[in-house]
Image 1 (cartoon, rainbow, N blue to C red):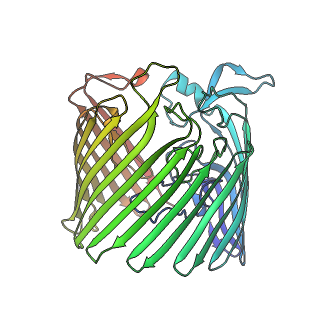
Image 2: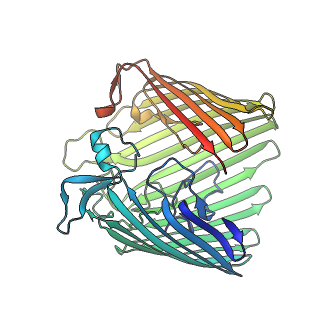
Image 3: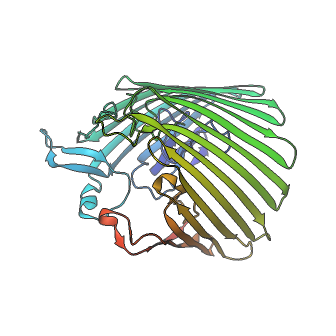
Length: 470
């Protein structure tokens, strides 16, 4: 429920909470670095409806947001069970379960996965108080997370500072100041561990056709934000310092250039990097051509240089080298009719890691999107060919799926990928989604590993979803 008197939002049941710049608390999907260099600032919705197939990363309980003129108050509480790995000695001294790791796959297909299902009780409470006017927003956030069990994760040397307790308290302050064509924003957070994290950014319109973005970030190795989801090179907001700068230039009505350069440092060791104080870069350049409303073409180059353990030594602590990666893409988007759109893509990449050989990857994909206004039936389809030397030279590509299912799989090895996603609307408020996908490999006799391994060179996946809207 939204906008009833002083009540800005009310949620009972499942929901997401998105606050500040995502450093202190942000549940649900959050974009990192994208092809739009001006999209580095988060625009939090506060309370957001839960609309995903994920079974762990959401809130279940109640949330309330209220406005008192320029003072905004939000409070929420959540209690639910999540998947977690139970140790063989599963009971702690006080009778609670002992947990060795959190599970987020959502799969419950094996005996072990079924044992992990809903194994741990998670309790979360939080609040935000913010002052907002036309040009200034400043707010404070406080959240506490409690797990009913003993957390005893088997942490390695690089991950020893990560969360390994059953309680966490994270506090933060965020701000946003707009003055004419300049927007300055940021957030500072601190967790119960004593670790802190901060980010500060700037968006500036230098000219009607030219925009600039800058983002500085500094995340301690012992910052423990269970629901932190800010921009970073890592998958989590820890152990990183970086400076990002982006430009967007509209040459004329037909041509546009976007670019960014991100330089970062990892003060402590990380996964597959057995050395502190390593650095890397991420550079991006894209040229877009819009000759008409029915056609747009873009070419893109991305260069990433990141630290990795060298492949040519047998020491207990590996020597650290670099992984150098280049991606080249050209994409065509053509509107054939009001109902039919074709999207074609060719992407080539090279990957070279210290101590290894240069690897290559190629992806050629053709999408067909059919969405007629006068019909209840619409569909998305793809046929793609791919050829990569290994998993290192994999190429990621977004796939359209059933509603609320977000998927960007990795294409690697040699073969073909095809899928068809259908949507049929029976009437207003009732629709059916069906999806069939197939992987065909020309260089494999088995697919997957462990319990997921199947013999053969082809794998199919099927999904169905029926939605009722009230």
